[in-house]
Amino acid sequence: QVQLVESGGGLVQAGGSLRLSCAASGRTFSTYAMGWFRQAPGKEREFVARIRWISGTTYYADSVKGRFTISKDNAKNTVYLQMNSLKPEDTAVYYCGIAPEYSKSYNYWGQGTQVTVSS
Image (cartoon, rainbow, N blue to C red; front, side, top):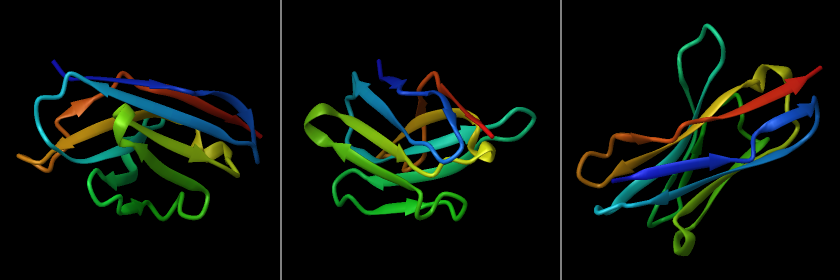
């Protein structure tokens, strides 16, 4: 059974930084990509960043481009999200997801980690 465990969330002042981690276990498939999404209260879940598992190619939402960096450690089956210059509007529950090669869709999700940015 696939498990994704996020960590690293917390409370930070505007302009500060946080680093999220997401460790994957139990995979029996090849990975197409891993990504980060977020959901603020009263809003739909939105895409933040993703990284192709083999090539390392990255893609970001415009709202975080230049401030957030996604990276991975294949040996540890872990993906990271370095978040700098945080803004109050970045406040949300952050989820990581994994997209298998067979679907190229995010079929598996972690439980989420809360990020709160105070002004």
